[in-house]
Length: 545
Ligand code: HEM
View 1 (cartoon, helix red, strand yellow):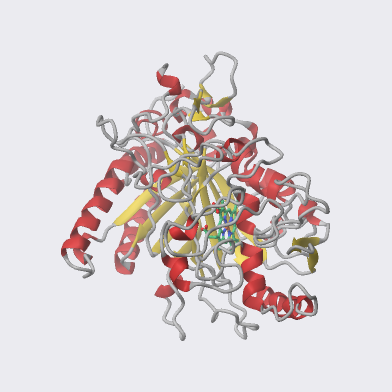
View 2 (cartoon, rainbow, N blue to C red):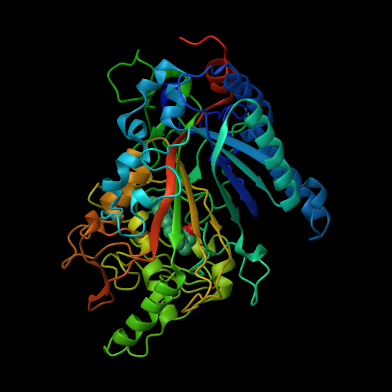
């Protein structure tokens, strides 16, 4: 087999930024957005800053080693906090304008990345009218005239360490002539001093987040079975051949997330496809970027405000309405929320616990993700089995998690392997002080929401596809459902910005309409997270073609 089609290739641990495959997963994160300043400018100090930055970045090898050590220490300390090991990690991303000013070959990136988020607002269904909140003219940064050149990502479990890291990085950047144009501070909501305390790992509407991620194939050493994603389950779905790391964690080839590696076949879950072409010397395939984009990944950053009272008011009002129907008699707002997400607030999947939240199930890694929508999965862990639900009678076809990951189902794209090539690695974190779960008002009208981040090899075929072709299209991803299943009411935008937001619930397919929006964009951008070699020898180098 050619190396280009290797299913479990060796991953270049010293080259790939750590947040991409491994995820920082830290309680405090800061995102510092900079501009190089007006043109023309001598970018020599910026280049020196970039090559110096390469020394401070947490690469995949650092993050993997740290996490191993952390786990060992935590185990040895019988649950005590292994505080001495806390650290502040740094990663970086460049927008297309930021790359184009450093290297002419940046023109080889595809048009979606080149156009950036300002060109994508129409495709994503963002609000169209300037008077609407979420309209690009009202963004805090990343609008048409305010695309930053570079973003620094800093992460720590220790707030003072994060603050010290921010101070140090600001000093270095400013000394190199960079201007900070925006800062976002993310924080695990359990780290706010509020009463009652907010649960850790949950987003502002109260739902556990970060449960389901793809498992990335590939090896981290020359040993044959030293995989990046451990394989305790080592099982394949008999129905469709998808292989898993943990239950529900479908394995996907690394080229779907980082350039230069074999991609996932969209026909056979256990086969690789050729990597994206890089550089101009390709043999006719799609060119994803210049040769130096190898080991790099595209980062989508969306600052999504969440109107928590509007969401909860909708649940209260609509639950009362639905409770009048025979199928949903007695329906409470918590269950309606679970139907919109596809999971209860604890993280328990609706498919495994249709009528009530099950907080224990929600917290058990693996059990909380063991379902496919397509095949009946018999229980192996003492919880209810997960039925097949092709029509969305138990877990609505337009629920958030089903829209963006229809798992084992056939879709308008073909068989389930066609869904593997749409997966993204989510790395988001909430910002802003939480309201109590279920709150119906906010006297202080504070800004809060999700700093949504995801990495992928193609923004067009992954993030944008999920938003515009599946979440916002009432007839997809599951074809042949009559009537249409509706749109994803959690992800936020209305389809094409002006049509009714609705979804179908239950066996009777009762329509639920939402006149208001509770998630809207307030900034963001498309960035590229380069490899170490690109930082040191291309973008940071003094002499550039
Ligand atoms: C404020 C906006 C959002 C909220 C509150 C939200 C919330 C959630 C929650 C509660 C889950 C279930 C837990 C989990 O599996 O991690 C989830 C899953 C997911 N979300 Fe979002 N989300 C938001 C925006 C987005 C956006 C913009 C995308 C982009 C496509 C997205 C893609 C996903 C994906 C891929 C999953 C995993 C589905 C699975 O594999 O089962 N989300 N989200």
